Amino acid sequence: MPATAPMMSLNGRIVPYDQCTIHAFSGVVKYGAGVFEGLRGYWNPDRGDMYVFRLREHLERLRYGMRVLRFDTVFEAQFMQDSLIAMIRANDLRETVHLRMIAFLDGDDELAATGPVGLVCGAVPRPPSKAVRDGVHVAVSTYARLSDNVLPPRVKSTANYVNNRAAELEAKRNGYQGVLMLTDQGKVSEGSGACFFMVRNGVLHTPDTASDILESITRDTMIQLARGLGMEVRERTIDRHEVYDATEAFYCGSGYEVQPILSLDRLDLGHGKPGPVTRALQKAYFDEVEGRTDAHPDWRTPVWANSQGG
Ligand code: PMP
Image 1 (cartoon, protein in one colour):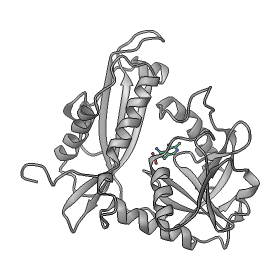
Image 2 (tube, rainbow, N blue to C red):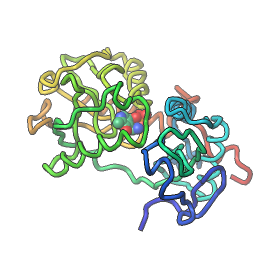
Image 3 (cartoon, rainbow, N blue to C red):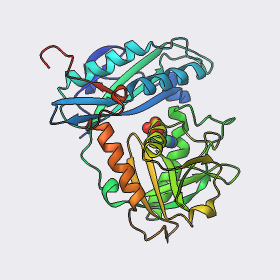
Image 4 (cartoon, rainbow, N blue to C red):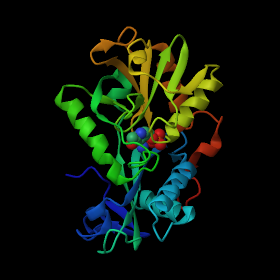
């Protein structure tokens, strides 16, 4: 059984899951010409509302990706927002969900086709994560992260995920729950679906945006939250062997949220348990996304508050 909610949005129309189909010879299938977004809608039971987290930034990134893939249609943010919210409402979703949007090359044309372009939105209910609570054991990948002049990691294209998938499969095969990818220069880059932070000498460090990472919205959130808590954050090039000396490390991403990394290559980081900095940042993060603080109201788009009958 698919975990995806029963109603989806295809090109602005609400359709049942099994009618949300495109041709097997479409450009996205043949050539991997698609751009993906993964977002979260957080249910706040006290306010009886769902908040889509940093929707504007996700839609801006999607539009950027569509432009870089030279799609002849770059959907307006408003159209994409309306499609997403309509899909959530069509499913009457009143729980925390992972939201997925793909702008894709449709039709059945040759390699340099630029249209027609489609948009699909769906939701997958997501219960609280065990990895967020307990942490994960991680290995350095033997696969190098894609580099900017190969397939730009800052474009969240579906084709990029062949690289991430290979790394994740390798890690799972070897008994790990997560992976740390290095750039083709051997510098720390990111996980298969999340960005990376570590605490070393009391300072928070994360690979800079030229380390072949996705320019992650959660990464930006964490940097702002950490600075707000008075922590020093450095964005820079990081060596693999610095990480073995970290006292704490964590992944962050819309899907992953904030996951403590307990060990790298079976070497414990700190005490091999989720540390105080990670726990403080997790708390700050969940307070934001679930709407228990009013520090950044512009980061949350309510789904039901403004809806008729909501
Ligand atoms: N890196 C990769 C490779 C990812 O797939 C993701 C998930 N989108 C992230 C980082 C985290 O990005 P974001 O915080 O924008 O979800």
